[in-house]
Image 1 (cartoon, each protein chain N blue to C red):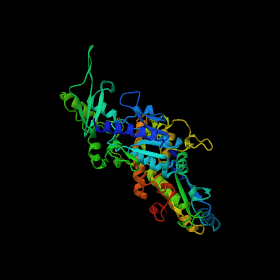
Image 2: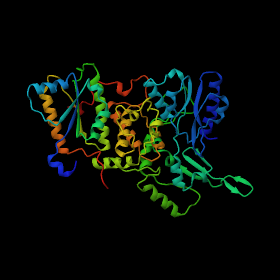
Image 3: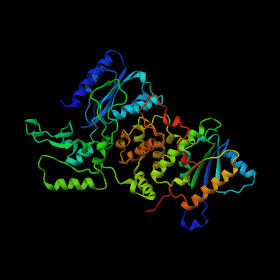
Length: 366
Length: 145
């Protein structure tokens, strides 16, 4: 059994005990999704449901998004980034720490299936199992013999974990939750130092299976093309001129369909009434023109200043693959530089925008 | 705004002024017959703390060439802390929009007290001249391709 399996076993045990001893009213966790290698949130009061709780490399959702809408005492499964979102919600007075039992997962990073599919050249249906074993990811497929059922793949494919993690997981500062009541494993160190290299030079390392050169070449050319392995537009943004940057975003936001998935999935977007839906005054037309799309996203990001914890959910949920993390990261770095503030680190600290220092940012003001 | 109009183009500046200080400063500039560029259109706000980044972006979206947020000097806010909050908001708005590709000159902030008519004239003149050099706001124009 790998570490995910051990954590899962312990999670089911702890969650069961919490419900049994009536310490919480609800458990929020993950259960297997309807598609292979997906998970879906599970919110339950029933003890029998707890056998469906899973921990695997695909528990991507930030469950903190449910907290402001739920009443009562809640036990919540939380990765490093989620725990910071929870702390941020506590700072904003949206939830009370006393009502929460945080079940922390020392997070080894989530696997981006798109990267796996691209690197192996296989569709999700062709893979039967993706398991994390230390620094490697082992991908097995069942070989179906006619009439004899499935025999396990004798030649599993092995990939480096660093090649298939989500970009934000590669750059994760705090994989271990900031605040927890129960920790399901040993704390994990920051991955940030190792991140720089793996993001820049996404080289496909398809091992074993003795594939010919052609596929390795094809994989490499794909990896170095304009679209990154995860399918997002990547460019060396810092080298662009101002006009090119604006042009880039103009082009990206032309695709936006204003489904508001990024907003709805975001734990920091907790307004009861969003400014985009306001009609008096109507700040934005509901029409998906790029001008409105861009304004929506800019204002959303400004609202997220000091709240966003780089969980990457907005980018993952975007059906049009707009590189939203480029914006959220900029805001994250900006509040760090300007105000020395990091979101979701200290539940007793005041939220960024309700606080001030006597001397700050004066150079921006005449 | 097409290139053919450029010779006649005049920058349009939106001033978001706090009622206690900067608006008083603007008023004093007028009553003391000081000359300042007529390019500024002023909105009187109860406090610079009323400024929402949405106002700034919406002004640019509507075609204003620049926005000037102005309030009381630090420590002199009528409501104690409004201008400190405005400062944080304007700072992130300006920096963030610069990252997206908007000229930082378009978003300006200043502290002007009700007695500083001279400073008001100076700031508005400088900002207007700055906008003149960077040219009209075509950020949200539809470009034919």
